[in-house]
Length: 112
Length: 110
Image (cartoon, chains in turn blue, purple):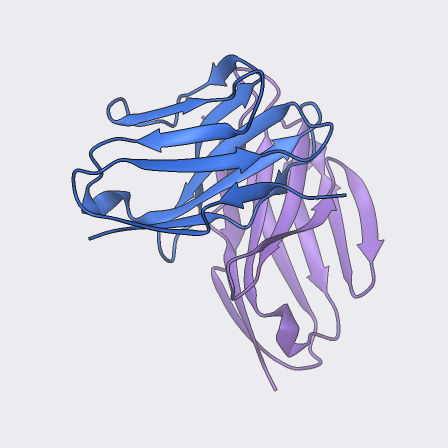
């Protein structure tokens, strides 16, 4: 039973480029969450999605960041015009309903 | 919003020692989880424990929801227990996001 799959595991972008991070939830899970972890810090909630709906995006920066979870395919976290401060580990989690979260291995974004 | 406080922030143990990690939260919660983030950055599920007591090998956890705290016990610690331990809670009202504490950083010496 495959776990939460994230790709890419590592991504390097130059300032001003776009970063796209993908997350495929565990089989049977319809809820997806994105978290950001800065070095030596905890995980900060960004957004909670169900299929085709954003349920809670209170942790998302107002500009440059967007997320989607289409009817078909993985959830995407998109960061436009990246800046050095966006360098972080981005974790995706999924759950069957509101309940136990299972995390992927994260995507580590480095902005040069 | 709900506050999640973990203590101690840092802990150094000699291999074989026991320890207790604490998580306090400021409001009622629907769910509570403990995670271990290993030195490679992976988040490992330890316990899903909104209330009561659970045990898994050398680890056990107790959540007293009415008093708004949870404890994680590590017995006979091993070097592989090193890493950061996070408590995460889901508040049932005003949204369903899960909020993480700042973590307890554990180093177990051989």
